[in-house]
Length: 61
Image (cartoon, rainbow, N blue to C red; front, side):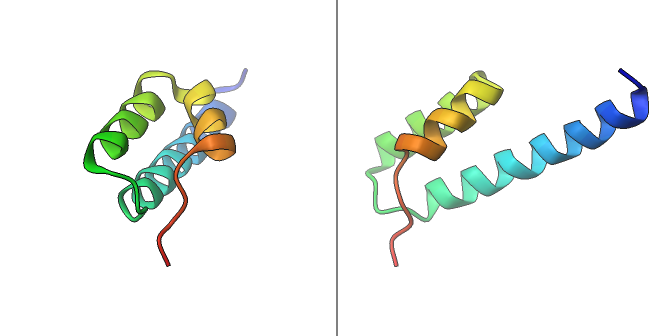
């Protein structure tokens, strides 16, 4: 894979992780659950994002 494309994919991944973290922090979940979700997203980058997207806490509006 060309370095230029891997850089773009890295930036997209970083943006998704930041978006997930902000969404998790703004959710109605307990503090412990928020910490666990953020750790899941950080430790398992792609799989964690997919699991969070499908089953993670929703924003409290």
